[in-house]
Image 1 (tube, rainbow, N blue to C red):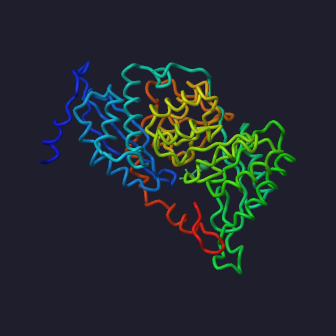
Image 2: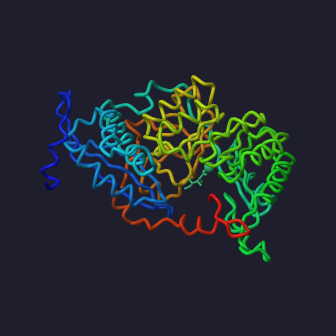
Length: 422
Ligand code: GCO
Ligand code: MG
């Protein structure tokens, strides 16, 4: 059976309210900052009516692109775009096996593109379709880092000067694979692996960074830190306690996903708020973090868990449980994904903080309408849908390459040579 014949197999299960139909679904990959971004574009039979969604899994973007173009498009073409829940569940169930970042990024891209279409049809921004604002804008944090503590604090001061009230601080640790700060290679000349990363050195250095920060930075600045999943539960307790005097706003990813069942111990051992979630790859994984009392802030990558619809449900669950949200939003989130984060931020009473990213001008050229951080604040667009477009000829000028993350992760090893979580 060829693709054309199968197109009519997936008929609407009920009579669509209007004649509007999906006519095409495709992935667009572009890398205006060098990081591959995956966007889903869904077109309809109404001229000029289309939607965009973020499906960025930058490390495996080719797999997501193929999944969307080769598997998802044929399920959706001919269907009514208003049935967002049915269409996204259909993508999940037709694959039989559940979960995972490839499937969920594709679902998320479709989900967000359909919300964009819904907003354009209604003439409303997506946050208004969700019930409207409970706050004017989302406060953000940006990343400060350096090879030395002084350099990291210089970088923090630059962010504070541009209006940031929340700053994530990372300092280099010996080795080539420290997270969030420049590499300091060949620091272990006598070890089997000279570029190794040592948890012992990291645990000594990080409290010193925050002690210096509290000394030098204005007292009202909120400080954050990302461990990036490299500690054991006991080391995580040790670090959380050592950081107590410095009043962190949150301490992120203290444990890898394999040990998330131990998070309640870490959380109970210290008053420092624990933020986890960017490695959740389904709505259920993320919901379990809240239900099992492992987090103070839930930090999922919205396109990894099923999109805006899943994010909305999680925000509600967070609200019911006294947990706050801090959606993942670094440079491997497209501007559409960033706009979805902000829509959730402004509609939810459970909002905690938003991770921000300052996109380069090439990204603004590819995605007209990309939100800009002003004095630390992100404000959603008023235009219908996301209020963000894509210029496909500009996108084509920034072709994506295979992710550099493979090469970097291959070098994240202990001084004895053992691979470490990147
Ligand atoms: C964060 C992150 C990211 C991830 C990245 C992986 O912003 O908190 O940990 O920077 O490392 O998204 O691709
Ligand atoms: Mg992180």
